[in-house]
Length: 524
Image (cartoon, rainbow, N blue to C red; front, top):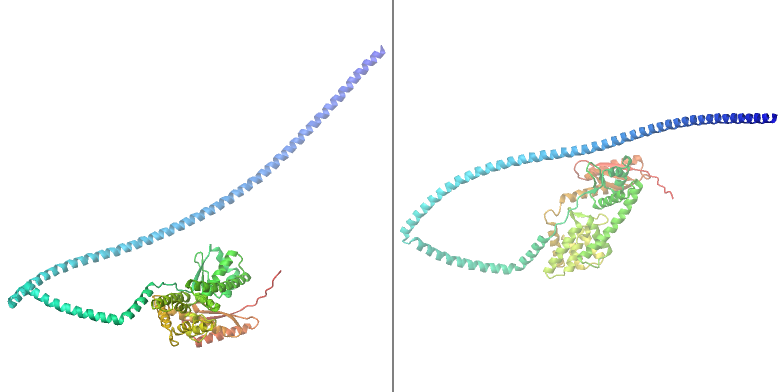
């Protein structure tokens, strides 16, 4: 019995213990769950706070971007508005000018109409007066005819017939005499008139060639390139002017740079060098000197190519290479403002045509016409007349004696020994006599510039000399290791005094002596 009691007591105690353990476990689980919920709330609050801060930052960035975009669009809009306003203003200005011009033209037209009306009125009065005088004259004429009929005893018709017969015979006699005289004169002057007609025909058909000037325009894509060409503190443009001897004018002219120099070779070298530098994009003093040197070599090759092309175009063969080079150099020389190569080509064609018409050797005439002015392009200045110098060159390089004589005699510097010589002289005169073909003033101007440069080059230590500003400024470059600063000042003074004493020129000539020292090394 007792064991039953013990058993029941044990079961009850065990059940109570299990219940207590289960209760404790449930409380522990509830505490853990509460802690997890609290941690989750804290974490969510932190995430929400962080998200709010990030959203605020993004909001500020977007606001700043929106403001920048707005300012950019506003500036672009204002730029477009200003451009449109400027165009409208220009259009309005042009319209006002056109209206003023139209008003002036209308006023002039009204004046012309009033003058025309007055003239018509005057003409009407004169017409009436003239009619009255004609009536009076006719009346007087009839009266005189009646009196003559009474005196002569002939009627008017019979008197006309008699007079007509007399005048007819006299006119026939005079006409026959005049015709005979004309025939006799024509026989005497037929050949001269034929030659004259040939010359006039050639002169009428001669083409007008372009005259070289002293200014070239270098076109650029935008005005931003002007700043790169000038360089920092003007270093690039000074280096370019020193290397080429050309004055480079960078002004407000849109998309254009002016190259000024009396020597066309220098201008062409400067133009091609600028083109290469702008295309390449590398513009600095060392690069400028390199490009100018290469361009100068290119121009020399082009001179030879031009000479060869000219001889081929004219059908002239067998010329010495030195003569071909001289012909190419003619492209860059002018005679009294007339391009020398174009002038020589024209004389060659004229001479060939005239020689063919006269039954002479057309090939020799064309050869002499092309070479007649080669003495104008010497490597160095000479006191020998260009006709004699050209003849000496032609003899030196094996040209035909007739050609040499025609070259030397086209200005009567020597005796004419062939029939080709007077043809060359006449064709040279025809080519130079065209209206606007030559300009004496330009030639004297170019000669003065050459004399300025040669005078400066005659001093010791002077390397280069360039006459710019239409001869009003002479820039002299001296060797820095041979000429001191004090000596540079003395050279400037001496040159100015020599120019003042030995030359005649308008205005003033400013002499600038440049002494520069450079240290150049190459990194490999």
